[in-house]
Image (cartoon, rainbow, N blue to C red; front, side):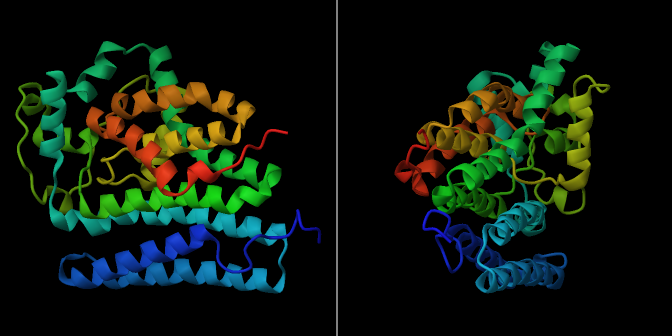
Length: 315
């Protein structure tokens, strides 16, 4: 095996280490709040199984250190994002809800509720589909970027993985401790009459027993609208509104593309990125302050996890 094709890390990747740290943090959180967590034993079992799979793939790689096995390790970490995300609801709903503060912040900044007015003001099927296209393209941002680096610039895979997954896990730490559900849940809980009148009551532990949300606005017969609904039904929970991880992760991915001069990928993602940033508010997923914060958090995460050290991939 040539030096260029040799796997850089013979142990755990930096992203896997970040995952272990996040898992340890949540285990401690579960243990310290045991009586308030719905099914603490199940949450611990989920972590044991998730990390067990990581360890198993690591062991296979020690026996067979080839890129095919590393690709399985990368794919497995991507799969586990679907486990760690909904788990934030199981951990944070015990702390109440801070939605009233974020709805109030939007009202103070804009004089109205952007999430309530955006889709009403721009209600055409074309605008709706463009917004939902941007929102569902979120998954392409990190999957395509990691895949591109894996096959085109393998030597930088470990750092790119750390930036992306480190970004996810830091967002998840915030979600675990700061329960904000977003307009789609809060507006329904308090009633649109209150929202339009500028009343934002504190509903405290309401979401401990309720996971109902508003029907998403827009053109319901649209293809991308349907894709978004399927994604929501599969894993959406009243959690993870602040900051918007959609905006944060998409922003840091765009910064990776710019830093590494992945021009084709950056151009391909540019239009979906613009619509994604606006769509988070359009579809009731986030307050405007969530998405604004997500933009700046994404920039910060890029540098926190060493994005400035990435090298250009341009030949």
